[in-house]
Structures are given as C-alpha cells and as structure tokens.
Image 1 (cartoon, rainbow over the protein chains, first blue to last red):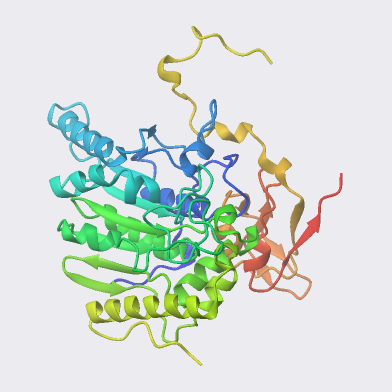
Image 2: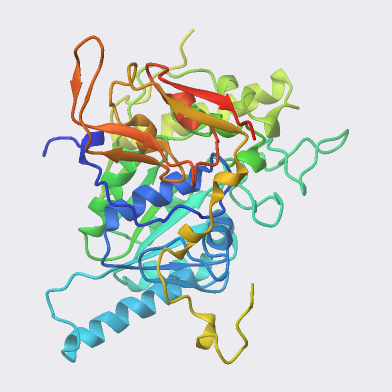
Length: 316
Length: 104
C-alpha cells in the first residue's frame, strides 16, 4: 500500500472562490473545497437544486472556477451521464484529444439524492456510466427551511417532524436509507462515505474514485449550522464527534472488500454527539438509549463486513 | 447601478466569468474577527484546511519567532471574505487564534 496522505498533500489551489453565500461555518463548503482540490481543473460539475447550489451561484456571480451546470432537482446523475457520453463522442470524433482526462462529477444534496434524484442516480449506476456521484448529506431539506428527508436520523427535530406531546421528532424507528448499500447493490466498483471533519480522508477518496472507471458514489456528511441548531464554530467538532461516537462511519468499498478509513478503537457514547445539537435537545434518556442501540447495530454490521473489530465498544 | 437589459444578457443567463463571486465581499457578515498570533502559531495548516471560505491564506513568507523558531510559511486571514464563523479558533491545536469583537 502506498504511503498515507497527510494534510501537506492537499494542493493550495482553490477552485471554489470565496464570496459564496453559504452560512457561517458551513460543513458543505469545507467538503466542496476539498472535493474540488481532488478533482483539479479538468472537471465538469453538475448540481441539482440544493442549498449548496443556490448559495454558490447567486446571479450574476458564481463561486465555481470549474465548468458547472445547474440542473433540475431530479436529474443531476442523468445530466452527468449525458456529459460523460458527450465527452466520449467528442473524443471519438477527434474534437478532444483521446488521452485528455475530463472527469464528470455530480454533487447533490440528500434531498436530491435520497428522495427526488433517486431514480436518475439508480439509472446512472445501473448503466455503468463513468460518473462520480457525491451526495453531501445534511440530513434534511435545509434549503427550503429544514423539512425531513429520507436521510433524517431518528429523533431529529425538523419543521415537518415537530416536537410536542404526540410527535417526538423524526419517527422512522429503523436505520435510515443506506445509500452505500443501495449503490453496492448496483455493482459499482467503488463507494465510500466521508466527512469534511476529515478532509484528507475525503480528498483521498475523491482522488481514488476518479482513478477508477465506471460509476462511483461518495456519501459525505455535512454538518449544517441552522438546520442542526449548532453554533457556527462547532460544525467541524460535531463532524468529528459523529465519527468518534459511531454515528457516522468513514469506510470505503472497493471491488467486494470493505475498509474502515477512520478506525475508532473506543467509541464515545452517542449522547455526546446528540447533546451538541439543538435538533436533538428534546430527547429523553430512553430515546437516546434507542438511538445508541441503532448505532451499536450499525457498528456491528460494519465490523462484520470488514471482518474484524475496527470500531470498538462504547467506553466507560 | 444600472442593470443590463434582456438583450445584453447572455443566452440562458449563463455566467461567463468563473469565480466571479469574489466581487461580493462576505466579510461584512462578520461580528467576530479571528486574529492569528504569529508567535504561537505552529504552522500546522489546520485552520487553512477547515476554513469554509478559503479565507485563510497560506503565503510563502518566512517568519522568525522571538524564541528563535523559523518558519517558511505564514497564515493570514483574508478579512474581505472571512464570515467570522470561528471554526479556525475552535480547531486550532495551540489556541493561537482568538475571536475579537468587530468594532466599527
């Protein structure tokens, strides 16, 4: 195996210009910066409606220093497929040199991936187009004002899953939709989860995904300051805690093998992650215990897939 | 400011200058201003890595601290774009960044 990357391997070039209108302390902005560092300048980005889309391209400005196209909510993956096919055709006809490596990346939010853009994503994965799909997941429709999505975790407050006597936040009693498992079911060569609190890991995964031909999926957690009800300076801290508590597991799948890229020998109790966020402040001890059980089950599942205990038991 | 008419706009309202958002200075959003103590800073790149704006600049400027440590790099905050979120101050491992109230 090659030497692991360090923070000094991240290039200095910025392809996301400052002056975008993403919130103070936005986790997605950190993720976009490092995704673009990994893709370099020879890339075409497609982006469906999402908070990252409206805030980075407020007319007449754009924060993107690479070719970028805005598409409808449901078809980021389909447009990316079309661009990939177009590049192939132009290469065949000799308009573009055959050895020029132009990458196609679709970046969608969790609403545009889990719910609305799901069939287009499924089609892209199933056809085997040479596209990297990145979902940045802030766990609700934050753009329109915090409505629940297919990615909202159990117990989270949103405006459509309110907290009162009857409703106790998000009600789905099971684990949320598992995007990576869905992608793997389409027989993709590469799928991974990442987290902007670990930018070197995110950079490495995007680089690795782009070196593989075929459809790839990367699922990125994106701490959201207004939607998660956190302080702006805490968004990276919350992202780190998500990994340290086992709420989020950084792993990758490559040709049948799973590998956890951020091993956690001793997990923290999930309460520490929930306590920092206003969207979970209503949870009782019993409800937190239920979330802890869900996390334990997910950790056990990943450990089984990897074949050894990479995420340890809860400490204390 | 005079706005262009529909005939002057490019077809599809395509934006022809990449990265044109630099014209919009988001520094006005700031209520707290990060200040880097160059004496304490160990040049670990953490603030640069975590800044959502890319407002922390890494410049090739040598710096010698009073205790004699020499560095090839210096980190500076671009106050034109820094929104003052405070991630840099929160994540700095040696607490070299302090958030100071912005005074007009």
